[in-house]
Image (cartoon, rainbow, N blue to C red; front, side, top):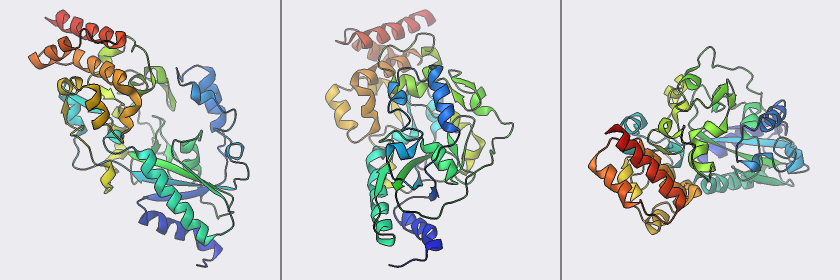
Length: 352
């Protein structure tokens, strides 16, 4: 198929839409000042135990170091919020487990990368003789910086990529290519204005300031990235959030424009969008592995899963199911789990 050079971006967007992407932008393999921001953030130790953020030299913020010969980066957006969905109801019911909306369905890494590879193959038919590499959280890439430069939105005060028509409940993926495609206009305007809802309402006060997150206090970090004990002073602030956190997105005014995803693989599995903390805490390791197969929740591991749930149960009302579930794990083989169970039971004794 022969497509005039200047019409290539529109044709690529058409193909991307057929593959389930809501938006696509094309930019140069540059991240601008974001590389400096990253280095300063790392120097301040705000990444906690995420040592991989400091690995790979300049590859994370210099695309041509990661993939030499790259001339363009194609940034793609795929919305994931499902409907009907009532995250606020789950957050307000302290006996239920809140799990970040992005991980309720199938692991997005595999799904999006597969679609990106299909998109790359289609582009290769339009512009032959070039190399393509597809990524979605699978390589050191400053994807939000590239998405902003590709015109997909701006980086909000909560460090999330925000789009005026779609909010922030979406995934990003990239195709690095040697094809000299026409580029899109970067998104220069910041539409956060004077709003500071995300900064003010973070449960653990994880924001040092606008656009600056202390990961060591972020619930997503504490429940997913951190492998050891959760700091005691932060446990009561976590509420019933047991895998990730959406608070800084849920309070963002722009998310009133979020549109439901029609992607079946993002639909909640095993009622994880509306489950009791106590029932999840009683899963055996075999049940955990079976019910999280193909899910990003596997990342925390069974021990981390129980640790997180123990904290949630410690913050829950002192009902019989909650107390009995905790007592059932008092002698768990893992010292990490036992520690958090003991803390949770102490919380209930303190209240009584």
